[in-house]
Length: 337
Image (cartoon, rainbow, N blue to C red; front, side, top):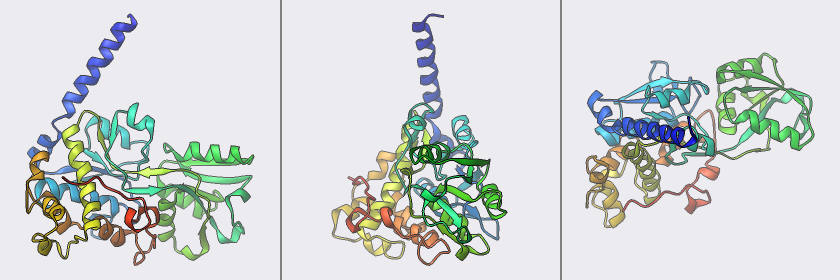
């Protein structure tokens, strides 16, 4: 087949895929719930509690989307996915949105045909070791056995870092984060590497967390965020503005506790966001109070962060880069107007 014909077929296939996926909002409304892809279990981000109910930072993004669409945060079903499975699940339509500590990269955005709707957690890859190893810097790890999860950006970052520093290592690969943690605990390897958020999450569920240290080096940029399929613009808009609404609400001082009184705020931007004036919801084919429902039932970005990841949790993660731009971080949302 000639190149031109091949291009025509590829273009047609892309168009058909986009057309087929464009009705996700209608499909979600028809079935009455959002199918959300999450991790197989990562403390603080997404894991089932003792009652089997999923909870965490990423789970609350799915709940916020549900609140925006249905006015109810609990119209969600969760599909646990490994790093290898997650993209196939989204491409195939098994899930409607993926909210699973996934790094926004060019190839995932372009070649795999996904649309990242924003960054909900700015992260970077790091290393965790046992204190007994006596290591204080990643540059002391030459010759180490390194445990990591396959199918992630972690593998290439690790190879690049060790090559750049003229160090050698042996990689020990596993499919799930739980398997990596167990191997690390059993001394199958000397080092655990993944995004620093993941290291804090895994350390929090180890029986002796005080005996494990996250080294200071951050060796990559890992902008994590939810994603949908390309060609699914209406659905992508809802996901994007769900995140923006949570960030903007924190910036405006709107919380789950004061959102009702803020409905009468004299600040026009607050009124627009909460649906007290205008009707931004109509642009998304949602109720005028879509953002109000998010904040009332789930919370603003800062509330969700502190609830699942912050100082009062076992993870004890500081906001850092994930603080608002106005308070020293880089978290910034487009205005709702």
